[in-house]
Image 1: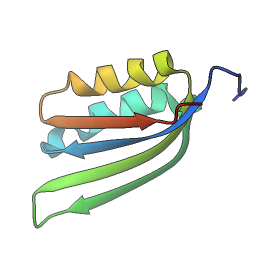
Image 2: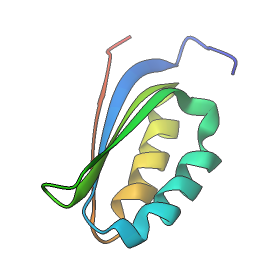
Image 3: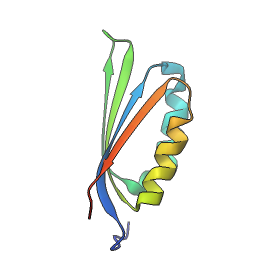
Image 4: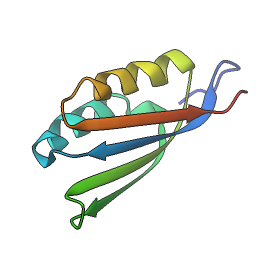
Length: 85
């Protein structure tokens, strides 16, 4: 991935409440793999969810496009935070 002056470093947290949607989530993440620097996924069976944490590096628009697609999936919660520069 080419880093530009417009790129921002950030984190994205994803909570999958409906495990049947995991494949759909992974397809979106695969499509945006060029933004993902690191990923950790942890099942949390006591709460019946899976949690994915991402480190991302891309423009605000690129990260927003990815999180927007994820946020449209029923049973998925997504939050992101990007550094200012």
